Length: 70
Image 1 (tube, one colour):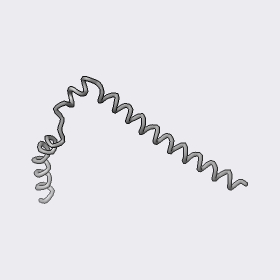
Image 2 (cartoon, one colour; image 1 turned 120 degrees about the horizontal axis):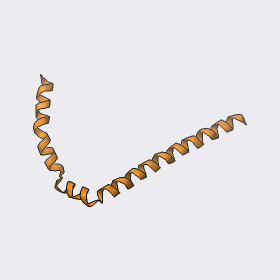
Image 3 (spheres, rainbow, N blue to C red; image 1 turned 60 degrees about the vertical axis):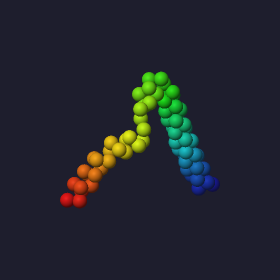
């Protein structure tokens, strides 16, 4: 009977950890949604594009790879 109690405690702790993890992820998603709906943030991120980010980072990446090859 004692072994069953330890098994149940382990399961409930694992379930609690899983619920807390998913709850935290839901709160992060909600917070990101609230931040991104702000007019100031949308105005600031309006000129953001992934392709421009890669174009700006390409020279630095090439320089890093040349230094690493030395």
